[in-house]
Amino acid sequence: MNTQATPRERLLDAAGELFYRDGVNIGVDALCKAAGVSKKSMYQLFRSKDELIAESLASVGPGYQHALEPDAGDGPTPRERILAVFVKLDQQSRKGDFYGCPFVSTAFELKNPEHPGSVVARHFKQRLTDFFLGELVAAGVDDPEGMAIQLTMAFDGASARAVVRAQALNGVGIRMAEALLDAAGVKAPELAGQAR
Image (cartoon, helix red, strand yellow):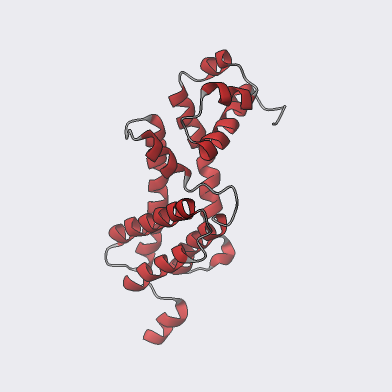
């Protein structure tokens, strides 16, 4: 634990880790103990556990998204950039501390679309869909909105499979994304050149 962090930061850090690993139904006592903060202090910093759920998800969201974003070396084409996201998901699934997409997990556990945590989860999932949409528009796909949704569903399905099966994806998600891109006419650069 970072002793220089404020009680608020310690709570957000502990909540981000515990909610992802153990679920959002973990008790406030366990959460406060992990953060080294009293329950009284927690409720002075956050109006409710629901607010803490939403804020902790908002605080871990950018880091999770950044870990999936294509790097400069991942390739310049829309296909390469989209597939880079699935490659990174595949790599994450090999780690022992992979528990799936934190946004899907949180929304699924909460089961209430109006819960502040569900609203935050939806926002971040939309950002992934918007990334796919931008790349598909650049690739000239006929129905980029529909394909962006399909790619997001493929991502979420692959992520869930890794958790349910308790094993690495070993390329399954990548191959699914490749099949979707092939069907939409977003070919690999070498294949696109052959089609001319």
